[in-house]
Image (tube, rainbow, N blue to C red; front, side, top):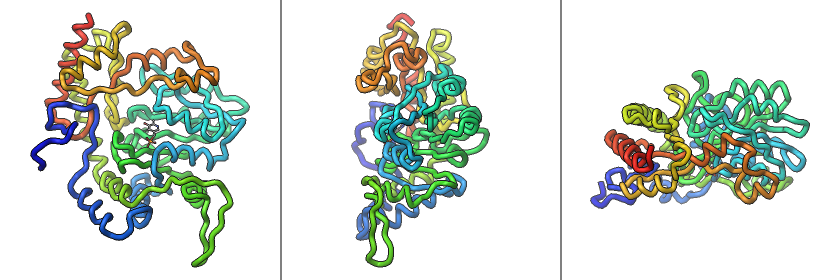
Length: 386
Ligand SMILES: *Cc1c(COP(=O)(O)O)cnc(C)c1O
C-alpha cells in the first residue's frame, strides 16, 4: 500500500462520488501487456470479447474504445440515417442523443416516469410514428427500463431496439442479465461505470447482425483477405480498443459481480440511513427500492423544489463529500433548443433533472461512509429549511 493516498482514495478524507477499484492483479497484467511487444488491439481484445460474450450468455460481442462510438456504430449497422427518428429519453448523458445526430437522424424525446426516472413506455408507444426506426432506452443508474413493454412495442411496430446499457452491466430484468437477451445492447467502460477499461465500450449483437460489419465500422472499413489483400467498401472510423485497455477491462469483468454486490449492500445502507433521518418525509425522493434488478451504478436522490442544489453540493463539498449531477435534461442544451426543443416539453425530466443529486457510491467505500453522507445531507438540508 502506498503511504500517501491518491486524491479521491477511500482512505483519504475527501469522499468522491465514485472511484474505480483497480486491483494488483490487473496492474501486473497491464505491465505484462506493456512488455509483451503488442499493446494495441490484439490477443487481449479478443480474450476480452470472448469473456464478455460468456458474460452475456454466449451472444456475439465486439469491443470499442468508448461507449459513445459503440452506440453510433450500432445505429450505422441498423442503417439509421437522415429522415429516420430514434425515440429516447431526455434524462441521460448527452452521448445518448448526440449519437443519433451524429448519424444524421432525429432524436425524438419522450418524458420519463418520475419514479423510475426511465423512459415511460406508455408515452413511447404514443410517440411511434412513420419515421421511427429505433427505440433507444437508457437504463439510468443501472435500473432496467420496462423491457417487456418496450420490446412489445418494437415487435408490434417493426422497430429495432438499441439498449443504452452504459450504466447497466450486471443489472437484470426478470432474472435475466441485461444484454443477454433482446436486440442491440451497448455498454460503456468509462472509469465511472461499474466496470472500466479506462475508456471503452462493447456492443452485444443480435443474431441477424454481421460482426464483420461492426469490425469494419470500428477500423476504417478495412476488410483483409489472403496474406496481402485489403479492400475498403464503407467509411469506418478509428474505434478499436487497445490491448492495454482490454486487459484492464478483462480484470474488471472477473470482479464486476462482486463489485455490484457491494454496491447493492451500500445502497441498502443508504435506504436505512436516509429513512432513519426521515428524508423521504422531508420531501427528498429516493430511488426505487430495487433489490434484484439494479446494479446500483448510482444512488441518486431528488431534492425538494426550492432547495438550491448548487448550495447543497457546495456544503457537502466543504464537509469532504463529493456529489454529482446525472443529468441536466438533454433537450434544454443549446444544440437541442436549436432543433426546436424548449422548456416545458418534458416536465418530469425537467423537474428531476433540476433536483437530482448523485451521492457517493462505489465498491471501495467503507460502511461508515454511508452514514457520514446521510448525516451530512440531512444537516445541510436542515440549513436549507428542509
Ligand atoms: C457513460 C455513458 C455513455 C457513453 O459512454 P462513454 O464510454 O463515456 O463514451 C452513454 N450513455 C450513458 C447513459 C452513459 O452513462
